[in-house]
Amino acid sequence: MRCNWRRWLWGVVPLVGLGLAAAQYERAAIEQDLTERAERAMKGHGAYWAVVNFSGRDVVLTGDATTDKERREAAAELRRVWGVGDINNNAGLPPVAEPYTWSAQRRGDRIRLQGHYPNRAVRQTIIGMTKAAVPGLEVVNRMRLARGAPANDTWLAALSFGLKQLASLRRGEVKLDDLTMSISGAAEDTASYRLITTALKSGPPKGITLASVQIAAPVVSPYTWSAQFAGGQLELSGHVASEGARSEVLGAARTAAVGTTVVDRMEPAGGAPKGWSDAAAALIKQIVRLQSGSAEMKDTAVVVGGIAADDVQMKAVREGLRTSLPEAFKLTDQIRVREDKAAQEKAAAEKAAAEKAAAEKAAAEKAAAEKAAAEKAAVEKAAAEKAAAEKAAAEKAAAEKAAAEKAAAEKAAAEKAAAEKAAAEKAAAEKAAAEKAAAEKAAAEKAAAEKAAAEKAAAEKAVACRRDLSTLGKAHPVAFERGSAQIEEEGAATLDRIAAAIKTCPGVAIAAEGHADIEGSAEHNQRLSVKRAQVVADYLIRAGVAAEQVQVAGFGTSRPAASNKTAADRAKNRRTEIVVRP
Image 1 (tube, rainbow, N blue to C red):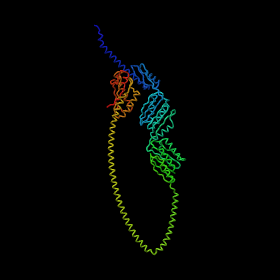
Image 2: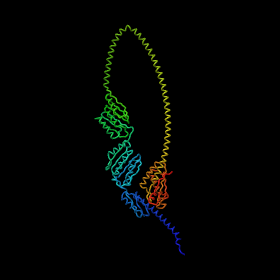
Image 3: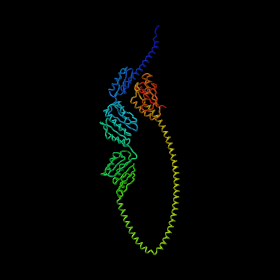
Image 4: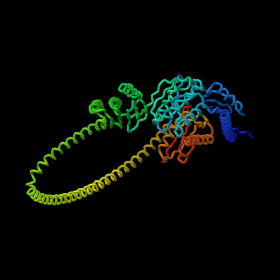
């Protein structure tokens, strides 16, 4: 019987297929095991930058080392991992930055770090320094790895000095170009302004050049200032618009009050009304002309008081204030003339003496006249007394009648005034009640309208927020290297943006959906896609996203973004997408 070899093929072909499948499965298991042990070795060695990609037992090492020594040491550590074959060391070095720049910006409750850092240990040191300098503020890291940093101790000392100044600013920025520093911003309050100006006068650490300082004083309201002049001393206190304005005011004081001690207690602050320096100089010039005087400004309201030597001096000061104060400032005048007590007492004594002499003379003349009249009137006395008695009786009757009429008129007037007052009070009460009811109705209607508008705006904002978050997640998937579930710096920057966007959409639910290319077995790729999704979800949770907002799903190779035919297409499929849930 002849052997028909074609019949054997029906048994050989399945066996060959099973053998190939087993070999492929075993290869994937070996690669997975080597990848996990190599990654643990790299992390244990401190080479967090290192990325390993196995093909069988051979490995390709990629990533950016800090130094060439670090690159070689990572390859040597891989050789110690049992089972590793050939090592292709493709690890690179970060670029050299010239100049070596760094900056920290503060906006409200957020600090943004940008520029370069020399290695990962220094990056963590910088983030720790920032959190210590401005505790409680959100720190956003946008720094990039680069070589070419200045001497480490001097450079970090400059960063520490700059961050301490930034803590005193409400908003501002500290920048370093190599070892040249610039600081700008607005102070939090007057105490912070004093603190930072004192520190800047003392100067930065040794080796640091301070190229530019632009610090704005805090804005205050109301804007107050005062000047007190007495006993050969002029004291200035309150707010001053700037150091230039301080120089102008002190110059005006020393010019107007030559020989007078000038005491400066003014504090820098923004918010001065227009023409403030001119007003302060004019007030100083006039109050030092008085024997003693004071001037107070509250925004554009001015009160001037003091003692003038005489009317001429008082009128001259008043005229000077009227013509020299800027038009926008409103003056309240409380200047008065000093009273001379001794002169008043002398005048009073002379007047009393003259009145006494006149009284004595009149008394003497009266006595003589009375004596002559008595002699003459002795005959007419009886008739005169009778006539006087009749006249007195008539006058008394007339006075009593006038008093009765006056009392009646006053009573009628009082009753009329009381009636008019009661009517006016009643009308005012009714008017006030009507105005109150109208105001309450208008307030209720306004509150209802504002509430409806706020609810509508909140709903529209929520829809727009979800839409923008969905667009951001679709436009920026997180990409991974072959066989890797490690997030690169570019992916971390993308996830920081997405985390910030999620936190602006309260209650939104998202899913981290992992995917893989077709390299490797389906089971391996399924596990890898889940791992990639979980790594992204963990990153978002660490960035402040609530854990209950994040779901995780892995789809292996079932949902490719590209065809898997080319390396570029496969790179597009190694991804995790952020999807907004309904």
